[in-house]
View 1 (cartoon, helix red, strand yellow):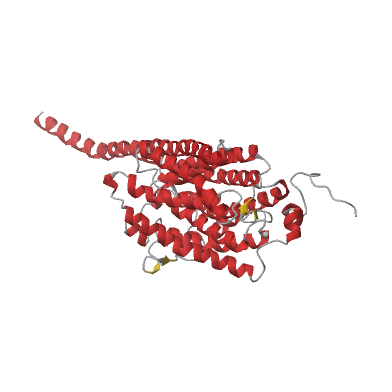
View 2 (cartoon, rainbow, N blue to C red):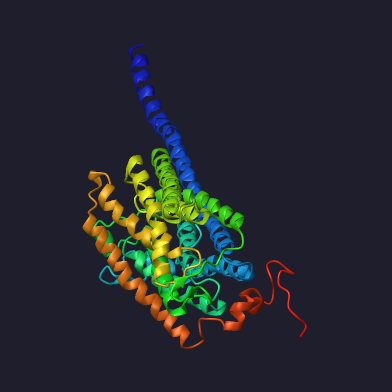
Length: 447
């Protein structure tokens, strides 16, 4: 009988030894499932953000075509269709490896290159996918960043509209997006020297919009103004052909910006997404009001094109600090952006720098303002310095503008960058593409 009772504890220990690993495995399963679910959500949000950024190209196409003349509409739509395709492909060839070189920095933290091609195979398992980042796959990362790549060239398209040769513009896009944009972006987003200084550009006021703005300035200078834009030193208005198209484009851009900024969180963390979307909306809304009021002061009537550009100015301005400024500060940043875009347009006209859509005022001026605003309004605990932000702004300008100028200069003295006077007067739709956006719009004599 005594031996019988000794058997019971022994059997219990054996049962526990067998059951404990099984219980631990069962307990681990829910945790793994939760981790995978969070990974799926994060990955999906990054992809949605990339899709919204892609939608912005439709916005740029319609804004630009609406603010330009009907005879150049097909040309503008053509350029804006080619730009995202060129940008995404060149980013795959070498842009991604230049922008995110990892440990492959060749010249300090100024230039790095991880090699040609994308350098990764499709993820075979969930575990391998999660090991890349913990929040999203390699492919989601490339997709999102690749959607940003062409935006800088799209900014240039609007500034040089109605007189640039389409072939020259496409060559410029190829070179600038493949080489200049990713190298400059690597200084901050790729862990380069500006990142080491704690320079902050959350979603690209500098690395996207100013980089595009500096290139636009170079193109405008080398191209010269459109025929009839400046007469006896005075700027003559050349009205766009469709304000409805321009308005639709701004709303497409406004919607896409929620992916531009919200996706830049690079996770679906609910508090961060909610906060960034609100600061983005505050900046845009304040920009609309600022530009409307300022246009009434300068032009004595509320100007729709200025108001639309005020919305974009507020969005560009808040993009650098959407994650690190208060709602009140985001309103101030957007309001200032909307106010300064109006005198900026008038200033460039006074300098006889012909910019049909106001790209310089929106993207360059407000890209600079938004980046500097981080050093003024960011939460103290972030530790961002105004002087560091200023260094970043100047460094990008010192490289982006000469690089773009050199590319345009070489093209000007080789294949040419401006269409003939006859072609410009007739319209680039017929001259460059042999077709019209609005058939029958132009009539010519049989003589």
